[in-house]
Image 1 (cartoon, one colour):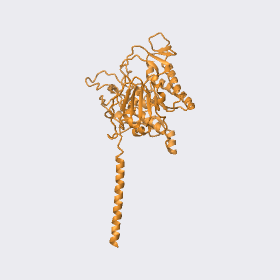
Image 2: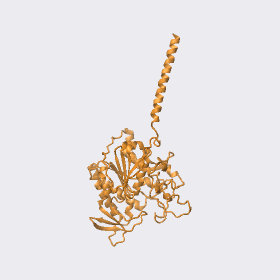
Image 3: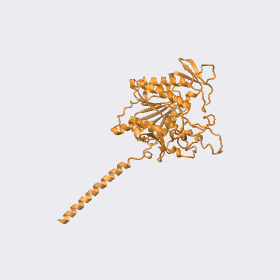
Image 4: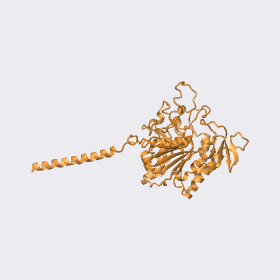
Length: 428
């Protein structure tokens, strides 16, 4: 009897060991299929053979409709006091979500790492809002949420800077396919085939119809002709086919321009002709009224963001007068003030946005503000500076080089914009 008992006990122990082994193997095999975002098994390489149509073709897509996130009462109360746009930059030992070697869509003049920028501290900060946590961008989750959706980023070169940041982040999961560009490569379209997600950047620096007479270096042969009563068709004609849009403008309004309305000249800003002098405030406010009124009175049911214009960090001059940006760490709150021009642009943006929101609530338009002014103001270290060019001091350490203190290195601080946008989408 004792031998039989001993035999049964051994069989029981053996059964338990077999069960535990099977359970361990199942857990291991499950986890082994969940590769990290930068795994080569998740990156789907696609040969990029862009076509060059002169007209951006609209792509029909379904209306964005996400279920409300489940948030407990304590978390909800905490979120009510969370301002994603007020906070500070804190150390981030994990570093950036991507590097230039993992993203082929970084333009040369923003590729600070490739161009020989000697310091790397600017890569190791993250935006930390007051009173709440901001998760870093989750490319896999974003792609899953955006299945069958279409995004459009509409604006100037900062907008293009922003969309490249997003495409680089998403390409850690699936390589983007550049399937469209205009003749000058200013407007582009990318597709993430596995998710049927399409992302456009549409070049429209004024958001209204404009004729610009600039060469590739930004040198003008005559004043810009700006129609303050006509939307730019490049985005207006495809507006209803987009699920998500981000609009922004501002910086181009400082340029010399002649203003038109009803085919009649109203006046101009710093033009050479004997015309009524109209200031930037007049033209920018009139433009934003036109654009935002169109948005809130349309039948479009997607989600639309308006982004405030970004501050620059030129010191000891402007971009054309020897201005520089050599700082290597972020500012703390209170260490820098917004320049007059940026303060004026932002005030107009906030006032016109608030006016539009009142109408949006009546028409059920979904309109959100992306006020990245403070977040960006605190990062003087994140610009290409002299490293908009390839190894600018290789032949002469005292070379006179034009600095870029407006656009952002990629990777860089602009990546945090996508952290905020994702949080707004996930948590409403």
